[in-house]
Amino acid sequence: MWFKITGDASQQQYLIDRRDGSNDAFYIVYDNGTVYAKASPASTELSHAGSWGDGKWHHIALSSDLDGDKLTGDECILVIDGKIVASTADAGEIAVSDGNVQIGCKHDQTQFVEGCIDELRIWSVARTVAQIRTDMFSSGDLVVDTGLVGRWQFNEGTGSAAEGGTNVDGIIYDYNGGSPSAYTDAWAAAGTFDGT
Image 1 (tube, helix red, strand yellow):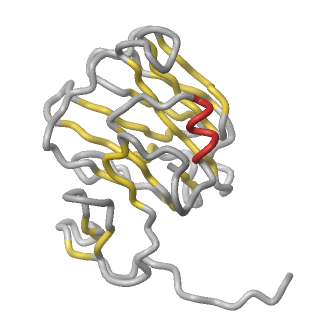
Image 2: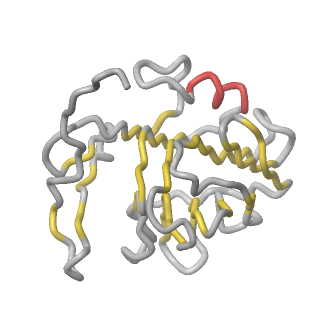
């Protein structure tokens, strides 16, 4: 997933979050210069401090390999801008559920991203660092798409739908009024580029 923090970089902002109970969670959250990530209830939370709230685009990936066929043993890695920045030797099994995945906010519709998210992908297989690097700049066809569960490119341009693939489409909501309503102004308007 690509992200860019453009608002208050000192605030906690959830890039992605999925929870079914108090411990059944995976998430990636930005908090005052540090990225925190957790792949499963049994895994250790990973974190890395950096200048991620600088208003520039950054690529982030979280890969968990319980059986050790892609990474080094039972491992979970956090990759930012193509480099491993944190890892743990206790990947833990990712809980399979039909719980909602929240993109751009916490599971309870709080702690919204003040910025942008693009090209979010969820996989059912572990991804190696080489695979992450190979596809991180791909906006079209991926080199390898085996195990791709959902891909949100956010290229729709109009409406409130965010297409992610078979049975994983979503609706963009506005929570400013306290209750959700479909949000149709989420897209950037077309413009002109004068070369400067």
